[in-house]
Length: 260
Image 1 (cartoon, one colour):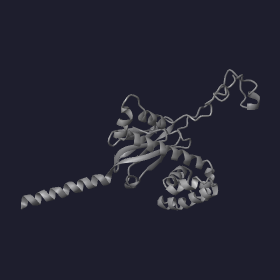
Image 2 (tube, helix red, strand yellow; image 1 turned 90 degrees about the vertical axis):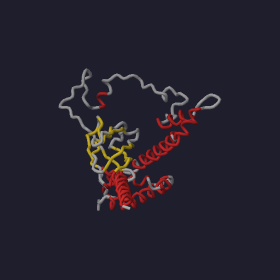
Image 3 (cartoon, helix red, strand yellow; image 1 turned 120 degrees about the horizontal axis):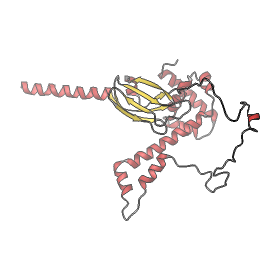
Image 4 (cartoon, one colour; image 1 turned 90 degrees about the horizontal axis):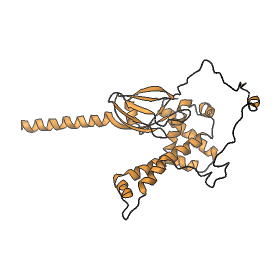
């Protein structure tokens, strides 16, 4: 009887421990973004567990973290940023990190040997330039065809093959890589569309009309992006209707982030 009680107590302790681990440990999914948008290959390091990863072309990343772990985000063009993992971060589906540009100021710049004045109307006659040679100036057939993205190229490689039995598509289908690449392409297209929506409106409008800080604008648009109705509104191409949707979502966003 005592042995059974001890076994049952041990079972409860193990269950509680596993439950605590699932509550305070998680594979975080996030995205870094900046004013200029060049966020690929940003290093994301969990210095508490010595784990690290890098962001993809659009700034997305995944990394395992525990409560109170310290994440360090760094890249040559950005200021290093440290974030302590809180309960709120662990509970978020995706959390966003804004990176500030690292500016390098020069004391003096001397332009030689052209003796430029800085006035483009005067300097244009001084500088001799070669004619611009591009696929469009040469009137090549595919001059205006957009290049495929890295994810689209990887998907093509994963789903193509030769021989009597093409093994490459079969193996990638079984491993789940093909499905993962399709999801990445869909996510990238969604993100690109949201970036185009942002260009419709000046940042000052977000600050004055919606009371959204400039550093939170991208985060707000991502908050809109995960709503399926947002894409339906965007497809109408009605900028007033799109702005009204963003305005309504901003009310919820401000309340969730204590911006009121």
